[in-house]
Amino acid sequence: MKWRRLGRIFDPESLPLIEGQCGYAQSPQALVCDGFVRIYFSTRVRDHHGMFVSHVAYVDFDPGLSRVVDHSRGPVIRLGPLGSFDEHGIFPMNVLRVGDEIHAFTTGWSRRRSVAVDAAIGWARSHDGGRSFEKFGAGPILAASLEQPFLVGDAFVAHFDDRFHMWYIHGTKWIQASPGDQPERVYKIAHASSVDCIDWTRSGQALVTDRLGPDECQALPTVVRLGDRYHMWFCYRHATDFRNNPARGYRIGHASSADMVSWRRDDDEGGLAASPDGWDSEMLCYPHVFHHAGRLYMLYNGNEFGRCGFGLAVLEGEA
Image 1 (cartoon, rainbow, N blue to C red):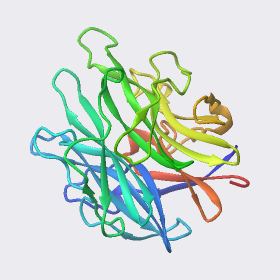
Image 2 (image 1 turned 120 degrees about the vertical axis):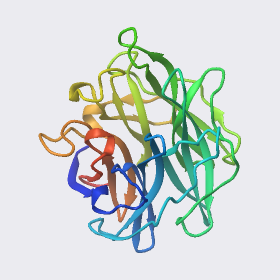
Image 3 (image 1 turned 30 degrees about the horizontal axis):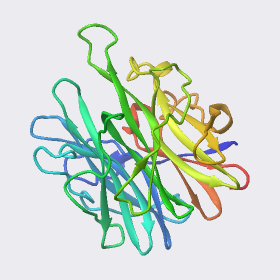
Image 4 (image 1 turned 90 degrees about the horizontal axis):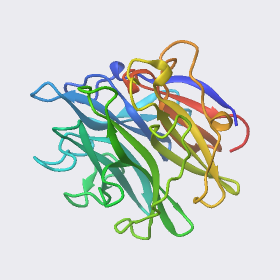
């Protein structure tokens, strides 16, 4: 597999969509519509304490994915109230057509005291063609469990063989590089399935082998079926010293499977390498792969976790 870069297609500094926006267009997720492609993403504002809060916005692109033709006016989904699982942000939000409706699977996060954050997965639905979303309820549909005790998030949902399949991440532990350092999280990719999007059965097994050792962090899985195999793209990094050290920051990985159970990892075959310079030279993260107009595209973020926007690549050959 060979990806051809089409460049950065959106810079949040060029089009502030939410009052007080502080850059960032993280985890772009596509919804192909009639005559345009809507791309949802999470951006940031600062609250009254000066701390970041994540809100979801969107931009609409022309069918050629070269020009913004419309955009959201303010957040497309509200955050939760005091004490809720999504009080401090929604990042990311994955969208899926379910019959005539558009559903969203959100990762809501809230701050903690001993560690930075916890997360769970929520569910929402749009009544206006994807311009805004209303939650089904105040709580999550997938959260901490006996075997997955914290940081459940990054849901990607697809419908294969009469079932909904969700790939997501869950935390396994918190670590400190040295005593007194900020605790850092380790998380892995997992799978669950459902017939109704309410009751989910978790597979309970590790899906993707580690390339960087047991403390490798894996995030944002995205899955498509090509021929008789399923292909997953995701991002991965070291657990510590990753924010300002490009050698330990996020890169894009790849795995494939014939049955969605056993996955063979091969980052070199299906991944996308960092550019020699520019906005995506130090980090590649938060991929989202989708079909459009007979081609397979990948949206992704670059340096600083998407602070400078998102780019686009197209798979060479047939998809």
